[in-house]
Image 1 (cartoon, rainbow, N blue to C red):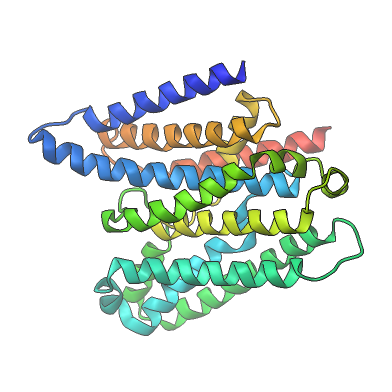
Image 2: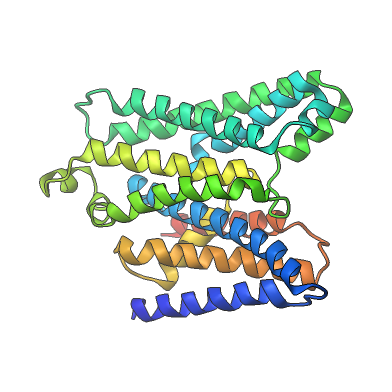
Length: 318
């Protein structure tokens, strides 16, 4: 049954992709397909990265209302963008090569992730289940710290530069730089291959620490590798379009509802396809029907926030 639904999701993705490429297309088809195809690839990469990283994170935490944004990735990205504007100025930041901004954001987010994971998970803990709880708490604290430093920088810069910093720190699915897609695809491909290789181990990790160890899984090693995969995927998607806090929550819970299975061999591709369908379909509607009257990120974050509140209220009612 879930395999059949996976095929339906694939067909829906194809329909959304074809509609994105062809609806209201006029003029030179070669240029239109190249222009829209580049944007389609970028949106698909971001959608897959967010969906897979969220499912993996929720598997490790065994909680379906948590997302990788809790680790402070979005706050760190905003801090990096604001710091660049602070030191270079708005004009200097605008003249900065996109590759420099991308690799700066990706490098520091990966560095912070590895430092955090290595420090907390590398210690020998006697108490069971403490590692992940301490990791979440530390990530939340660092997120607050990054936001505070960002606010401090924003108070010091020129008001015109503040507009540049604020704009660059917001998610935008409309300004994906095509020059960054190749390196992003390579990094994402490595992360997705690693996640697919661990798909059966992830099924066991979802049972909890004790069950995974009793079944012969090297728990700490698998958790660390999975967290590195999550960090790489989140870093790529954030560096490409900016932080998107609640979209992963929306897509992951939609996947759990439509694909009621514990098998990550189904959940990972299903979440990727549904995520791509939501972003591509939403962008098509906004571009061709609403003429960009509302940014897609605003709608996505609104729906994700509503989903978060519904999950919280549902949990309290039990």
